[in-house]
Length: 118
Image 1 (cartoon, rainbow, N blue to C red):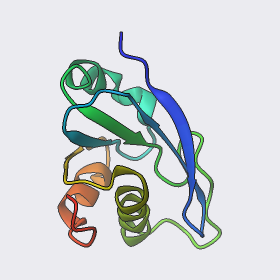
Image 2: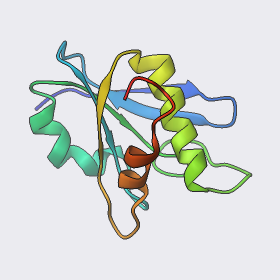
Image 3: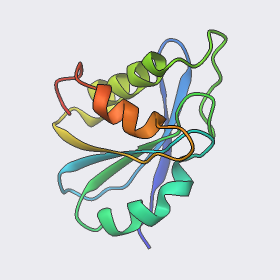
Image 4: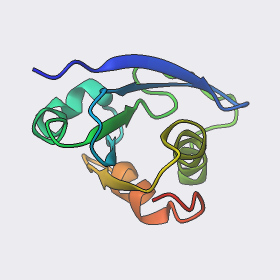
Protein backbone atom coordinates (compact mmCIF):
# COMPACT_ATOMS: atom_id res chain seq x y z
CA UNK A 1 0.00 0.00 0.00
CA UNK A 2 1.29 3.45 -0.93
CA UNK A 3 2.09 5.81 1.91
CA UNK A 4 0.22 9.12 1.69
CA UNK A 5 1.52 11.92 3.89
CA UNK A 6 -0.97 14.51 5.15
CA UNK A 7 0.06 18.15 5.05
CA UNK A 8 -1.64 21.53 5.27
CA UNK A 9 -1.63 24.71 3.22
CA UNK A 10 -2.94 28.06 4.45
CA UNK A 11 -4.85 29.61 1.54
CA UNK A 12 -5.45 32.88 3.36
CA UNK A 13 -9.11 31.95 3.82
CA UNK A 14 -8.88 28.44 5.26
CA UNK A 15 -6.27 25.83 6.10
CA UNK A 16 -6.47 23.17 3.42
CA UNK A 17 -5.56 19.60 4.37
CA UNK A 18 -4.16 17.42 1.62
CA UNK A 19 -2.26 14.19 1.21
CA UNK A 20 0.50 13.36 -1.24
CA UNK A 21 2.82 10.48 -1.94
CA UNK A 22 6.50 10.70 -2.80
CA UNK A 23 6.40 9.03 -6.23
CA UNK A 24 8.47 10.89 -8.82
CA UNK A 25 6.00 10.33 -11.68
CA UNK A 26 3.83 13.00 -13.25
CA UNK A 27 1.54 14.95 -10.93
CA UNK A 28 -2.09 13.91 -10.53
CA UNK A 29 -4.74 15.64 -8.39
CA UNK A 30 -7.65 13.49 -7.17
CA UNK A 31 -10.60 15.53 -5.91
CA UNK A 32 -13.40 13.96 -3.87
CA UNK A 33 -17.10 14.78 -4.09
CA UNK A 34 -19.25 16.43 -1.45
CA UNK A 35 -19.62 14.69 1.92
CA UNK A 36 -16.37 12.77 1.36
CA UNK A 37 -12.69 13.24 2.20
CA UNK A 38 -9.42 12.26 0.53
CA UNK A 39 -9.35 8.89 2.33
CA UNK A 40 -12.59 7.92 0.57
CA UNK A 41 -10.65 8.08 -2.71
CA UNK A 42 -8.16 5.34 -1.75
CA UNK A 43 -9.68 3.05 -4.39
CA UNK A 44 -8.47 5.54 -7.02
CA UNK A 45 -5.34 6.65 -5.18
CA UNK A 46 -3.79 3.23 -4.61
CA UNK A 47 -3.38 2.10 -8.24
CA UNK A 48 -2.61 5.59 -9.55
CA UNK A 49 0.02 6.25 -6.89
CA UNK A 50 2.12 3.44 -8.33
CA UNK A 51 2.86 5.59 -11.39
CA UNK A 52 2.03 9.19 -10.37
CA UNK A 53 2.85 11.82 -7.78
CA UNK A 54 -0.65 11.97 -6.28
CA UNK A 55 -2.15 14.97 -4.49
CA UNK A 56 -5.51 14.47 -2.76
CA UNK A 57 -7.00 17.48 -0.96
CA UNK A 58 -9.79 17.56 1.58
CA UNK A 59 -12.04 20.25 0.15
CA UNK A 60 -12.97 23.11 2.48
CA UNK A 61 -15.48 21.97 5.08
CA UNK A 62 -14.52 18.32 4.52
CA UNK A 63 -12.15 15.95 6.30
CA UNK A 64 -9.41 17.82 8.13
CA UNK A 65 -9.65 21.05 6.11
CA UNK A 66 -10.93 24.22 7.69
CA UNK A 67 -14.48 25.48 7.52
CA UNK A 68 -15.38 28.74 5.82
CA UNK A 69 -17.43 31.48 7.38
CA UNK A 70 -18.32 32.63 3.85
CA UNK A 71 -20.12 29.49 2.69
CA UNK A 72 -19.17 26.89 0.11
CA UNK A 73 -19.77 28.05 -3.46
CA UNK A 74 -18.10 26.04 -6.21
CA UNK A 75 -15.80 29.02 -6.95
CA UNK A 76 -14.28 28.71 -3.45
CA UNK A 77 -13.44 25.05 -4.00
CA UNK A 78 -11.86 25.96 -7.33
CA UNK A 79 -9.84 28.75 -5.67
CA UNK A 80 -8.52 26.29 -3.09
CA UNK A 81 -7.46 23.78 -5.74
CA UNK A 82 -5.79 26.52 -7.81
CA UNK A 83 -3.94 27.68 -4.70
CA UNK A 84 -2.76 24.11 -4.01
CA UNK A 85 -1.69 23.67 -7.63
CA UNK A 86 0.27 26.93 -7.66
CA UNK A 87 1.86 26.59 -4.22
CA UNK A 88 2.59 22.88 -3.87
CA UNK A 89 2.17 21.00 -7.16
CA UNK A 90 4.01 23.60 -9.30
CA UNK A 91 3.92 21.53 -12.50
CA UNK A 92 1.33 20.47 -15.05
CA UNK A 93 -0.99 17.93 -13.47
CA UNK A 94 -3.88 15.74 -14.43
CA UNK A 95 -7.04 16.31 -12.42
CA UNK A 96 -9.58 13.61 -11.63
CA UNK A 97 -12.83 14.79 -10.06
CA UNK A 98 -14.87 12.05 -8.48
CA UNK A 99 -18.57 12.92 -8.19
CA UNK A 100 -20.84 11.53 -5.51
CA UNK A 101 -24.31 12.93 -4.88
CA UNK A 102 -23.18 16.32 -6.14
CA UNK A 103 -20.63 17.05 -8.81
CA UNK A 104 -18.16 19.16 -6.84
CA UNK A 105 -15.16 16.96 -7.63
CA UNK A 106 -15.81 16.83 -11.36
CA UNK A 107 -17.01 20.45 -11.39
CA UNK A 108 -13.73 21.63 -9.93
CA UNK A 109 -11.78 19.57 -12.44
CA UNK A 110 -13.75 21.15 -15.29
CA UNK A 111 -13.56 24.69 -13.94
CA UNK A 112 -9.89 24.82 -12.93
CA UNK A 113 -8.42 26.68 -15.87
CA UNK A 114 -6.72 29.48 -13.95
CA UNK A 115 -3.69 27.77 -12.46
CA UNK A 116 -1.94 27.20 -15.77
CA UNK A 117 -0.69 23.91 -14.38
CA UNK A 118 -3.72 21.67 -14.95
